[in-house]
Length: 218
Length: 218
DNA sequence: TTTTATTTTTAGGGATGGCTAAAATTTGGT
DNA sequence: ACCAAATTTTAGCCATCCCTAAAAATAAAA
Ligand SMILES: [Mn+2]
Ligand SMILES: [Mn+2]
Ligand SMILES: [Mn+2]
Ligand SMILES: [Mn+2]
Image 1: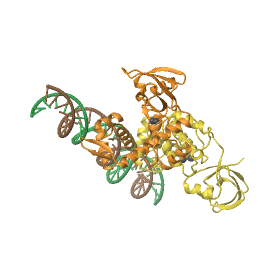
Image 2: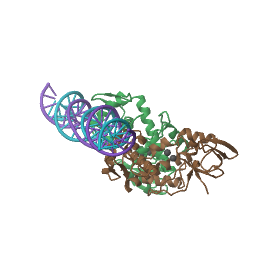
Image 3: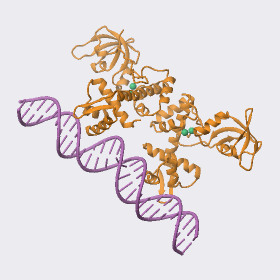
Image 4: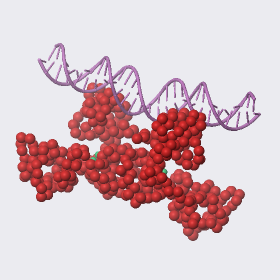
């Protein structure tokens, strides 16, 4: 059984590892957790003793299989609760993250197993992120960023990279959500901006927007 | 915002106060919380500074209005989550308490408000205990213990006093649950035991059982 | 009314999870 | 290769919430 703080560290390191490939630096963890590097060193040394990560002084840390599984399980709980909040309690997709941050630490295998069933065994959370299975495995999906598409390519929005309220509310305003079809009508090489078609609307988006939307093309 | 430990103390003191009427002793709190009296003194002094209870050295503590409201709100959350676990996730009524002990500490007014609506604004939890409203008020209900009934009186089971697994499983075996009609066929003055009728079955129960079943007679 | 037993508080300390400041190590520029 | 900058660790400290042992106050008995 891991403490709330330990679970949050494992989750943060898991996310950093999957983004940056390779050992995770102390500073990167500190920034992700909004804490000080010295606090990270303390915790990382404790977690190394518990064999959930390997740590080499000054060289960074990486999760062991045990650590990965534990982290994936916390992420599984987070995302299942987000589905619950949106599907059953009618929360908006930009309101659920902070509540899920708390709910992800409730300890009960049976609870999560029943919640999963109650929700119809969902594969993705409200932001399009995949929900790990109970063994910590995530189905690989072939998705790309909208910014990687070329002129005249099209696809379906399957997720968002960042999911802060401002961004999600922008998407709402433009009627973009999970499942929305998007076509690239034009792309500017200079700044990466695009003109896209969503339903009957055509409009301009910046590269920053395009870099935060996951698209599935098939 | 109160910590997990603070909320648990407030809840325990609230329950002790409503049972024993009058100031609550340090030892009583320690026993209820399964902790040491010295730890209770520490926490009670801290809570007194926060104005959620009044504390006089060697004389005991009692909750202020603020403290009562805070405690009732934790109890409200506990009981709403218990309803969720039983009604939506199909847990059995003897399995939900420990999980609700964790869920009751999730901080979000909006979450509880929506959960309440999702559950159809229930008045009672799966054990027949009343759910306080968002202001901390509990509707007074006129219920009595089965042990207070006389021969030939009858009523409906509306709740259980203790709700540990062993007792709840005993009730299941005897097909007694919330809403079950019970008639007192006979009562022994010597030991308070009874013979009761439940559906078509007639059987003996001890005084201990009769003292833990709430009955409504009308 | 003493004496004894019980209850309650205080003193001192441990584990967890933070912090700042200073020291050690690594990285990068010249 | 050397110095400067950035990163990382260590040392020492703080807050929370728990503990044991000892002291103080109250309650019960003699
Ligand atoms: Mn989230
Ligand atoms: Mn999400
Ligand atoms: Mn309960
Ligand atoms: Mn209950």
